Amino acid sequence: MKNLLNLTISFILVTICINNSYAQKIMKLENELTSNSSPLEAKRKGFSSIGKYQFGPYRIVSGKTGWTTTKSGTKLFSTETKSESKKKSSFVFVANDKDSVLVSTSTNTKSSESDLGDFSILNHSTDNYLAILSARNDTSVWKMIIVAEKGAFVENNFSAEGLLTHGKTRIQIKEVREWNDGKVPFLKLIIGYEFFLEKHSIAAVQSSPDTFQKKFVWLHKDLDENTKSAIAAAAASIMVYTEESMSGLDH
Image (cartoon, rainbow, N blue to C red):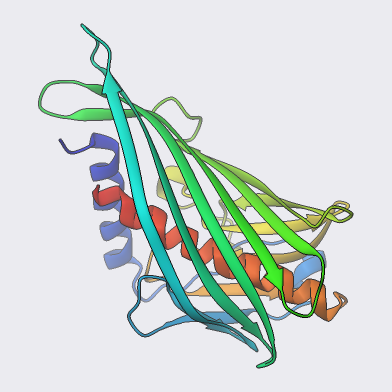
């Protein structure tokens, strides 16, 4: 049974793409980051289960997805169905044509929807997205967690926040919903994420679900190369996660 909210989102995204196919946009960022970085356009190369995104000296060179397992159930005399799914994937990320990072991801999704007869409504869905970044030239392992929620019972229908850390360093990841011209996407869709270290903006990734909008990555010029590589790999992982999340609307 088709989910009403997912159908609505898909229809709106198609409409947005048609109307804005020539209106390329850049998301709104902190002045500190825009003054100390240049946008790196991210392009998807080839056809594969994991998008081989490339931007600046960074690129995904290979990847694979694992099986998705799902279980669901409905209590007797209830119209609510609860389900849980788990999915894993991995990819190899290369920086400056020499330093490689193995990125292993897992997504745990829990959702609840109500059956209204001819259609169903997504009440609430939570994604726990975990990415483990292991660099060959660095003994420290970075971990990124993003918790994303959507559904009729979620404020603004969508919300997300995350953390990137290797123990000592803790980088907050915040959602971005506004373009730099001050406009907000219809339904207030999340169009990207900005990375903050001690309240200072140090990086960002534009990963709008509107496929007609280009994807970009920003990295603060004062970051050391190892940290740049880790954040770049995290940004690539977010683009992969966004792509997987949108493909999931059809299921």
